Length: 92
Image 1 (spheres, one colour):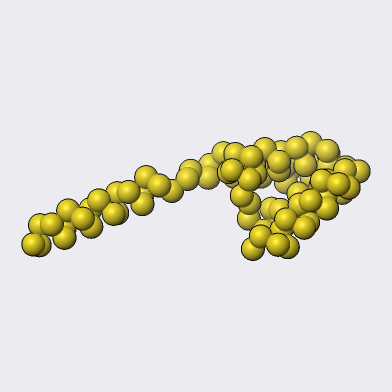
Image 2: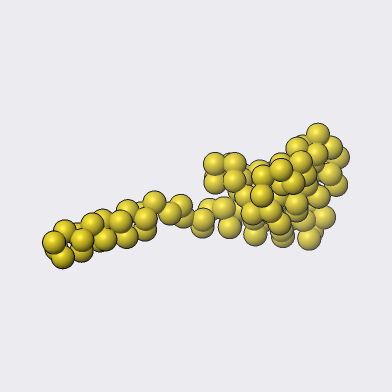
């Protein structure tokens, strides 16, 4: 009985470890977006934020979603800015 429980636990632990998404790509896009924002290149900053979200199946950290809203707004893309603003306020 102990062997069955041990095997089941190992299966659960290894399954959850492989089930976690690698956030490296997401983080790299966000870092680039932040740098572009600091350089006042809002259009390319917004593009990099969108790439980050796309790399994570549309999911994002709320702070990143807000920053994307600012980038899109400052780039003059108000529709996309409102999309990200509303998305961040309704998908906690």
